[in-house]
Length: 201
Image 1 (cartoon, rainbow, N blue to C red):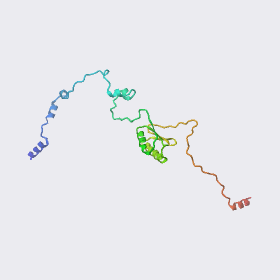
Image 2: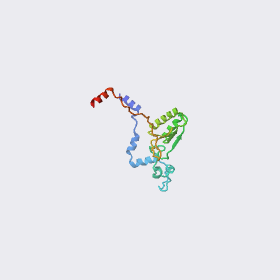
Image 3: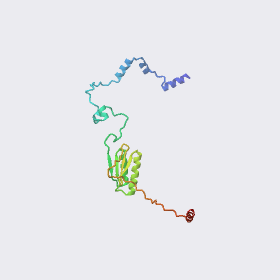
Image 4: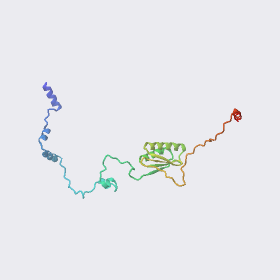
């Protein structure tokens, strides 16, 4: 029976000598370190003074005033910058002729660009459809929308705040309310009221 187990251990590999463990158990810390350095030896780089060392390529390319350029921090972290956050804001003016051009407006919003849609050229039904489409995309990215004129709309990403300042002599157009005539006509007096009035006198 033990013969079967011996054959099984030999087949699986449990009876192999553990020479590699034996070598490292007997070595001192210094001997192991020397052995490791010999096995993984690399050509020694000349030591340079920190003041004369040339800046890394990443710090060279970084514009002055940015965190990378001024602090010397490597940008190789896990943080991915959002396009347009630190740069100059861009406004895209679009005068689409058909609804098929609307995905370009959504793409511009995703790139954190503001979009001005001038829909005066489009058919009114297509223009309404276009506004609804872009407004839905703007809502999805937590953006803002503003009507700035007749068939002209401003759509901005969440990083842009839109405010309207009062201009002297300019009144913002108010939505027109339907006028309802509220004049009350007196109810007809009943015939018996006149008799009651005479009796009371």
